[in-house]
Image (cartoon, rainbow, N blue to C red; front, side, top):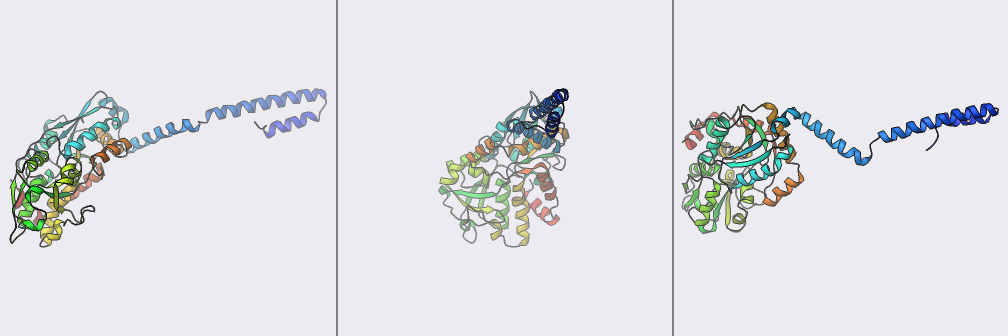
Length: 392
């Protein structure tokens, strides 16, 4: 190691004196050199190596990120340690919601402080309204139950459905991993290969399946039946879209309205080999379905476009929300929202999602809340028209 300037000058001075001075100065220089060498070695030992810096830096970044989310990490960890968190899915097992919920459950716990176990519970009924009501009113409101049900049930609250027992404006939205787009596929057995076939004046009938009001599988057929005069025979009351898909396989019904993310994941085989998409409920044509018309291309006027957009296209953006009851402590809601933000950056989770065919289009808790708040600003004439079409 190079000597310091002080040590060099001391040695030079020692060479210019008498023997006694030489010895004294030499001893002083040696002591100075040894002290500075020791100090430099100590400083070197205190400096982290590259291997040591990386994990410390990552930990600091994680702590900073957690701090940005405004929650007490230790308090949240103390609560969730040893707990089981239930994702309450308002549809039957085997469908797109269920598939995505199980993927989330498999990976989310590692990002929740305290690392709780996350499981899925299915509670189908009334287009997932049963699960919405249970999550908001009967389930524990301590942060151990996350709702994962059809977000368009929020429209039923706006339309005054007395069966709705929650206030969407009071709930806490954690975020979403998908913003969806609805499509209308028909089976090969139905003989319907284009939407024009079911339009007047000589429209053939398409038998469609659905679950309940508040779900696009029922709302969308009712609207295009009225607004576009499509020849549709709607059979509702199924427990979920997985049940409708089975009815399509048996020939009981010939089509349904489903989210594109579900079609690509839970029903990928049918989507690729048997179903023909005849309409999309989107503002623009879907990139990999360029020959399929959008419902807005067929809408007869501006008011019809507003009705379709408000009832089907806008709700698709928040159709898969992860949500807490109003009374869940804000600290835990913030922690779960932060955990979801981390999840959608996890390489293992991203790989698992890609295998299912789902395309992530995530929303933060703030973004999801803003979308829903904006949805409540619906024009009154549009709301009244939807009340006529979609009320029980």
